[in-house]
Amino acid sequence: MIRKIAFGAVILGSVTMLGLTGCSKSEKQETAAPGRDTSAMVTDIPAADSPIITELKARLEARPNDPDTLQRLGDAYFDAKRFNEAVTYYKKALEFKPGDADIFNDLGLSLHYLGNPAGGLTYIEEGIKKNPYHQRIWLTKGFILAYGMGDLDAARSAWEKANALNPESQVGKAASEFLAQINKK
Image 1 (cartoon, rainbow, N blue to C red):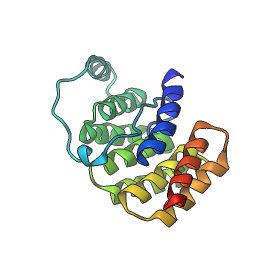
Image 2 (image 1 turned 45 degrees about the horizontal axis):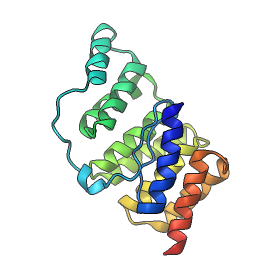
Image 3 (image 1 turned 120 degrees about the vertical axis):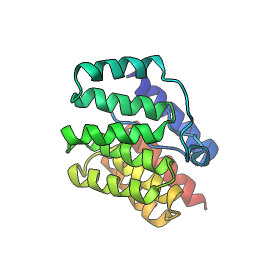
Image 4 (image 1 turned 90 degrees about the vertical axis):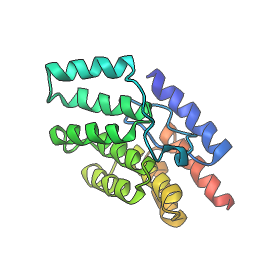
């Protein structure tokens, strides 16, 4: 819950300051992807595993097919800006949870940060097919379309959908901020 609140505060501030954000993370495990400069995220930064990654890997050794641990490990790698590894674990999690729009969202955003917005958008579209009422995935779609593909008209449509689903939620307010930013252009 604290991560959700922090995410909302950061996303709204980041949109205003930078006009650039990420739409991560899943409803369960949200982190502050906003405000990150995607140009610095094209390649993973080699780093030692954090304590949380080490712990999650140990859990995975005991239960190698646990989709929640796979997803959380993907989230931990995402947080560490190790997007190739995040993609690997999100894909494994999807094998066990093929209808989980949160995983499609996070996988799509990871691919975007790896410099593959078209590949990311493919997963976003698949997630939307699984759950067209998933508000965050519409926000992410708009983000990738605007900042990865330069398609502001399509981004506007996605953000309008995200906002329409629940304009009072943090995601709806973030979509509204994105719309305000592109309407200034």
